[in-house]
Length: 169
Image (tube, rainbow, N blue to C red):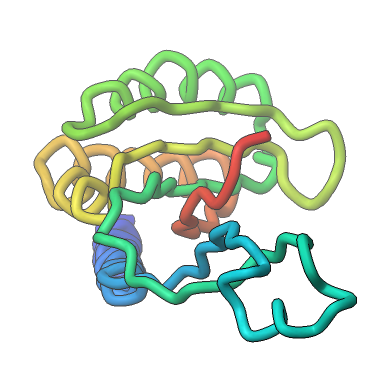
């Protein structure tokens, strides 16, 4: 039982470190297109009679300064063998451990209505560095060990992914 939890903890730490390093690499510099409005008279096309007085959008390329990106750790749980026991343990033990994570901006725990997963949890961090430091902390290690315990105790599986929030509508 202990060796299984140790393997899970090591694998989890490796995945988080690899994904957050890649996220930092991808987001150190971004290129974006900005559209600025110019008068048609200021462009070469203003010499054509059919374009006099029209306005156009001219794209300009610029580098955006590094911006903090909201990063989430998403935990996807399969259906446990003992649903009632899992729910009680998850509510009373696991969720309070999530709340102790340093650098955590927020968390959302959801129960699936359909699909291959039973539960989903989103742990929200300001950036990849915050996620990595939280999971490397003593509180993060306690959370990972508890996740391994829940899997062993209730016959559920946990899949983890890290995501970058792109938009909120």
